[in-house]
Length: 115
Length: 111
Image (cartoon, rainbow over all chains, first blue to last red):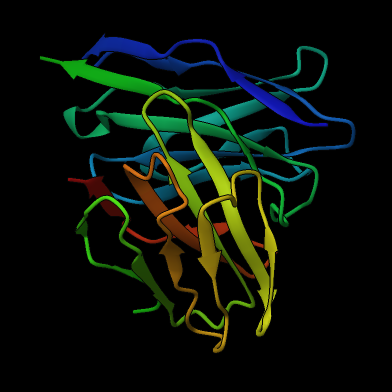
């Protein structure tokens, strides 16, 4: 069975400061892990994905995430927040490389960026 | 541009009424999915289809029905049996290698 826990439901940062959104996962196999972003009343957009290649994954808009097997974590980071980063972020786990038919979503982290 | 189109963007349903949400993709993806999103609960899988004329129930299929007569289309019907249909509905597709592509969603409200 697979599961994912997003440790913070809300994160607030100032513009220009680092962003850290935390995600822990549980999976019976070598998981595929994804981060998606959702702006209000929009669909989800893929930020980045890990599928057993390099453990440090770079995504769009300056985001990156590091897969740490020993800690079962896949935290999302960005060195400097921008106002346009304000959105909801979902950590997603799957036992299959592209996601297959079984994606498990975290409950989301709402990121607020203040001036 | 390739993508997924969901319509309508907003939909209002009266008690006891069936409504159908449209999902069309031009990505040539075989697999398509319907998710329901409620505040604080992430996304939950309603139905999915891996190929034309075939579909399977997801985790919360009760009160919903689907069809997959064409590769491009995967409409979702919310029936009167769904007791709490107010939610944001997302359609997605995948080619199983890259990840999921999502539509922009339909917000359904019961009035």
